[in-house]
Length: 486
Ligand code: ADP
Ligand code: MG
Ligand code: ZN
Image (tube, rainbow, N blue to C red; front, side, top):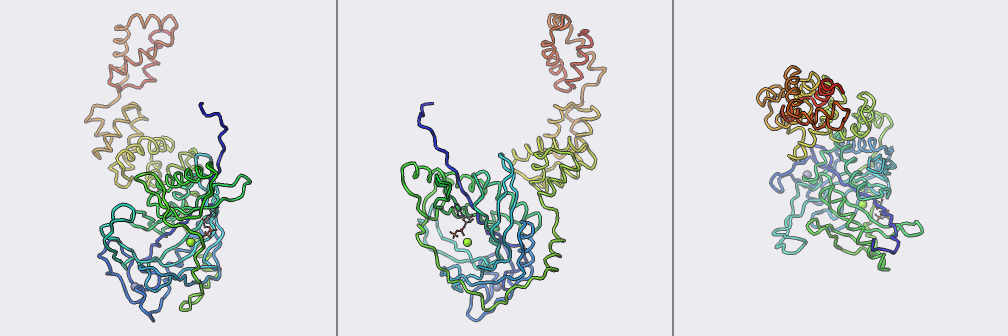
């Protein structure tokens, strides 16, 4: 209210870059195993250590997975693609160059449709290319930013891991949409099995390019936010960078191109290095590898083998289970939850199943911070609980308590109902309880007889109290009204 000056609206422009480990058994250009968490430098050979004269041999599986990812992202798979040397020096890159793809990548021009709270956003996929990961630098004794390290070690187990880079168009309008884009991409990649995409294992990394649109609508200068290690931090980091940029613009300053780092501990971004000139990597076609020639039949065969994608699964849930877009979206966002749902819906009402799973069960999972696969609740338990409600063995409110107990103990719902005495008060018993409540509350009963419907709620409350919540509220109301001739 105190603010009188009209607030200018700033329009964010965001593009994302993903690096994704492909789910191959072996590395991109040699036969060394791809492994996580093994002793350092136990999966190496002359090729992935970059010894002079060692020759790369292309991993066919990686090509297949890259093409499948591209198809799932609605890209065009190139019939001709070229590997290129990207030259730079870094301790984790002993060859002095990375084998990557440059002007002829394996996939270009796709899109994904991302659900956000403001509706669906279509995010263009500029390109998808294949490359090899670098080794892993480990800074000894590192604490906080970059200070305090007493030395650096290199683990070459990661060096040469098949890597896919996916670059989006600058189509993303908000930090929230950026997080949703990352989530959507991850679930697509997991659905088709091209990557486990586990961020904690470093299998999925995300960088964000962030700018604010100029008043004339043209793009502003962008900065690049590096290495955010969770999607929550992608959202928060972008938001922090946008407010930094906005402040500079409001103060009449200019945004400088820079590489930024987000510090979750302080919720601030700081500059890693300013990026005044573009790097010149001196790309040239990799002379030790032939260009990729992918036939139409080969590409079509990969297309045919693609499993159901999250968006397709969502439409199917809306169609065949008659669910809302929202419920279908929630259930299919997590593949395991989706299969759990389908299992329950085989033997229970589809809508009730959706409500219980996307509502109460998911709340319990979130509270405990566990996945459905680690939960003690089995699909048959969920189906049984729903049938106990349907045949009026338990009231809806008692059913919540039953589910919480099943979640905690792994006992079946009927066992929990028995043990905890949560069975719904039967109609004969309910009749007696209601007579008692009427006798104990003569004034309120009289007012209901006189047509004051508001007081019924109070009497229903008394019935629920007397039955410890084990009565069907609707039934209790009906019986009360009947008895009081209202
Ligand atoms: P660079 O040449 O710096 O690598 P590119 O044009 O190749 O830039 O784009 C790299 C990434 O930055 C892409 O994800 C793209 O969508 C995004 N991007 C490009 N321009 C902008 C901008 N003005 N604001 C935000 N992101 C942008
Ligand atoms: Mg790049
Ligand atoms: Zn090797």
